[in-house]
Amino acid sequence: MRKKLTNNLGLKLLALFVSTALWFISININDPVSQDSYNVRVQLKNTNSMTSAGKYLEVVDDSDYIKVNVRGTRTALSAFSADNIIATADIDEMVGEDKVPIKLTTTKLSDKIESIKSDREYVTIRTENIEKHQFPIAVSVQNEPAEGYILGQTSTNQNIVIVSGPKSVVDQVVRAEVEINVDNVNSDVNVSLPIRLYDADDKVVDAGKLTMSINEVTTNASILQTKSLPISCVVKGTVLDGYVLGEDVLCTPSEVTVAGKPGILKNIDSVVIKDAVDITGNDRNIVAHAKLTDYLPDGVTVMGDEVSSDVEIEVSIQKESEVEITIPLERVHFVNVPEEDNLEIDDEEDIVLTVYGQKDLVNSLKSTDVAVMIDVEAYMDKQEINELKKGTVYMPLTVTLPDKLHLNKTYRVKVDITKE
Image (tube, rainbow, N blue to C red; front, side, top):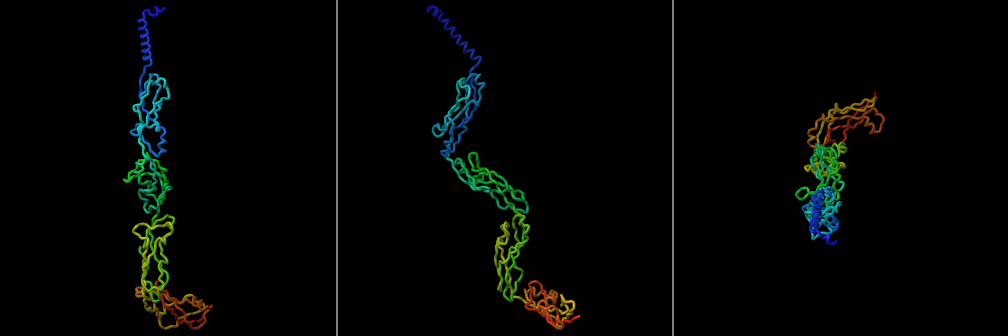
């Protein structure tokens, strides 16, 4: 038996080798081994350990993007894709201060894959302390409202934003701002706007690495109407006897442009400064000041730097002048005469009135500027009588003078009363 097995041993070994070679050839012809490459992104694991330590983590030079070479049979690779490759790098397994080893696994056909290799072994990272700062939110206004309107106050529904992120980026931020456009508007603007962060050179800071407590705020711009108003000043009290107010009380400025809501401005035609100056007992000029804002309604403000909120009030007080004015008797007429009575002036001489007041007004006064009459009904009321008796009485004259002129006494004339 042994002799039979060893007979032609060389031929038998040759036959075994040939058959084995043919088997491998057949396999490689029908399902050959090949290699494919895939672009894969590495998933970082346990990054929260860095966050918990107050560190910001950043991948350097896109080292989390790798090229993976997979070797296997053609049949296996034909059913394989990049989605079947899981590439991970666990922060907790970091080597040194910046290298995290990459691990590769597959989700299918692992028994038919001969090898899987990456073009790099590590993901390189950079860490930095996390900083947190808060910034007030400013409002930047672009353009101008419509003609006749101005910008009032601006506001936001929240006025602080907290910015956190890597120290090198947070330190660039110097202010937070929203930008509102009021171009040609004539009513309030209320809109939600994104918050932008700016550096010291007024350039927008890239917020891609930053976290903000809020990203946008509701912003309001109040739009006010403008109106020009005259200013007048009214004094109180009376000057010392023998003196009179001079020319009109002078207000500087004499007009002001104000701003407010249309509903308020429509009811205002002027600004009257009352009771700011008391002239009681004065015999010389007075200069005083009043705050204009004290005489404006709530919600109305003074516009422009050229107009001060203070008003200067100049009051001229001068010694009064006098002049005698002759009124012919024929110019005196009766009014409110009872039907049954006849009245006639019994004086022979014309009436001479001494008129007092400002020098320039007194000097320019003419007889025709003065109206004189006798009000019979007023006389009867004063005397508390219901009818006039026949005879002679003295009745007061009612004298009407131009503004700022006056008499210092009552003038009377002799009147004859007859009955019809």
